[in-house]
Amino acid sequence: MVNYPNGSKKNWNTPVSSYGGRGMELEKEISITNQYYLEDDRAVIHKKPTPVTIVKVDYPMRSAAKITEAYFKLPSTTDYNGIYRGKYIDFEAKECAINTSFPLKSIHAHQIKHLDDVLRHGAIAFVIVRFTKLEITYFVEAKRMIEYIRNTDRSSIPYSWFEENGHRIPFNYLKPVDYLQIVDELYFKE
Amino acid sequence: MVNYPNGSKKNWNTPVSSYGGRGMELEKEISITNQYYLEDDRAVIHKKPTPVTIVKVDYPMRSAAKITEAYFKLPSTTDYNGIYRGKYIDFEAKECAINTSFPLKSIHAHQIKHLDDVLRHGAIAFVIVRFTKLEITYFVEAKRMIEYIRNTDRSSIPYSWFEENGHRIPFNYLKPVDYLQIVDELYFKE
Image (cartoon, rainbow over the protein chains, first blue to last red):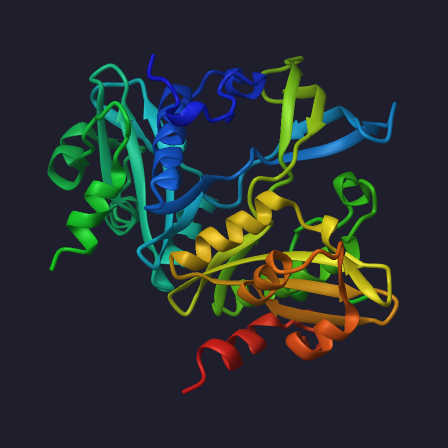
């Protein structure tokens, strides 16, 4: 287990992390990486909170309102955004347990629309896909993935497509998902 | 009551909006404004979900996980961010019920640090403050507010400071808090 740099209090073990167990290892590693970027003053990129519809709140004490009924909501945007080298950064991250293809149902239509929207306004937008059994993590430019999705009848993207169109994200103990290295190569190469 | 443009389904009346009742009128109006900007393809700016620590989830059916215990968490960033004219936008919005000053405890130290962080990386960052009884809404550049906060012993910012340093945000039925008009004047004037 990789330790959090500087003993940050960001809590991996809050129960929300175990909800469904989906994509959580990748999420933790991106969280470590983002924290590293933040402390290194390299970028300010955060995960958005899980969207929840709150139905009922008890106020046993003013200072500790307790939510007693709430439901998970479909996100209307991607999970991550922020700023790097003056540019707006926006991305989604997904784990994939299948070795041969990435099911398109993993990404909601709302999220594809959102990525398309921000691209049109000048964002650096991408999707991080980890094939968990292969232990390989790809960086895919959002415009390429959107293009593929809009021109296919398939319900998944074959693994070979990632080999051809994706960029493998290097692993590093301090920055387990060092995606800004790929951003530098693709968008800031002189 | 101003109606939502294009019959959007964004639900103002979800119970979360009534939580505490703090700053909600302004929040609704910014939501209408952001939705207008989005549909007009002018900017992509969203409010982040309310951060919640989820403790207990029941799964009566796979499709309807029910959260039965959760707590509100202090936000580590501001509430709003997105992209406009290729620039990263970041802001916080606060209502103030006092006519004469804005209490500094309304903005958490984390949020001030966050605004300072994103500014250093090239963001357009600001705070929207509405004096509810006066029905006046100010746009304040984050760098000015941070400067004030770091050089004062006061626990509030006097109203006169907003008159001198803020910019009044015009009201408009389609865009009740048309803050991008101020952004254009301050950051994109040729």
